[in-house]
Image (cartoon, each protein chain N blue to C red):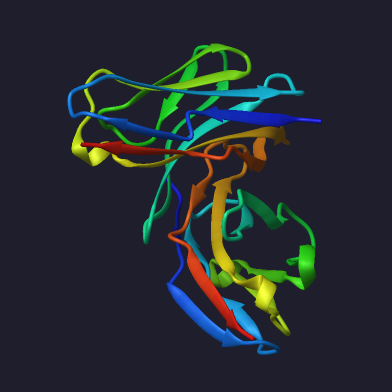
Length: 113
Length: 115
């Protein structure tokens, strides 16, 4: 089965700082990759996804992620964070053609105004 | 539009008692359905998923079971709860894209406390 590692458990940034959250997966075949976000008191929601094509994908709220196949990575980036980005971020993976979706342990982001 | 309903929101049960959590989806047909458990520092653990009525795949062997008696209904059950079953349970649904699960839509969750 696939697995996902998110090595940053808690990241604290000041507003306007740049963000990069790491995500690595283990699976030898073709994968679909996702980033989900959970704002305080809200449901988990999709931030962005990669299925195929351009490995640099753009999501909502200025987030982007780059799929680097050789590194089995799908890191999330944002050039300038805002206080409203304070949330928990989850990376997820499923194998192409599969219906089970595996999540990482999540990274809590705190943005200080 | 599609909606997902999950209930109850909170539940306190004694050890050894049965469990039934229900999830229903409206506004779509033949969805994939999922049960996850979310624990602090452990992310979301996939428990069960289903691609159709009566089709259940279990990812983690444990004290829980799942059933899908109708296309848009997914039930998480236990005959005898353990203390370790405490946690936050999330139901989710997705469409399929090219045979793979597409993005998940999550319910509001059930906080289960086993005492």
